[in-house]
Amino acid sequence: MMSEPTQPTLDPSFVNTQHDSTSSDDWYTPPEFFESMQITFDLDVCAPVGGVAWIPAKKHYTIHDDSLSQPWHGRVWMNPPFSNPRPFVERWITHSNGIALIPFTKARWFRTLWDSSASFALWEFGAIRFVRMGERKQVFMPCLFAAIGPKENHDAIRRLGPVR
Image 1 (tube, rainbow, N blue to C red):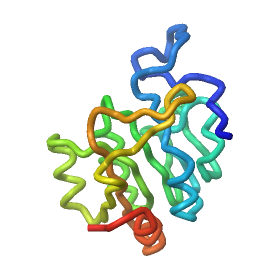
Image 2: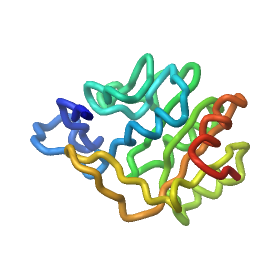
Image 3: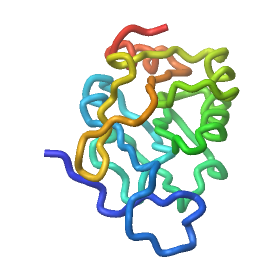
Image 4: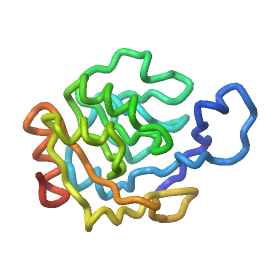
């Protein structure tokens, strides 16, 4: 049985306010993806407060840590806030070591990612059933996994499906 995070993740605009519900960006990657990838991360750069128990990361940054201003090290896991993924994706490309789950979009930042050295894997044509408030739900747009850096990262997403 999956455990639900005990504290909500907050949108950046709510950092200094009391907030009783989860934000629109609280879509957690299901545990079966990590089981399939068979890889451990040094850092989860977009973790909810308290982390997610099934994400195999040694350390995590939450919104309170402001991961964009922190040093990133080693293999990074990133499921960025879909409301504003651009700065996270740009940082992830610059860091050049990790795996990310990102929305497939027409935004300019996606073209930058597509043109990078990253490889991509779709999961059942983007139909990922995320964990949201203890239930499985789909987001409104297709998503894909991206890997950049060492061969192990690319091999990990190959375990999820076809890779470009």
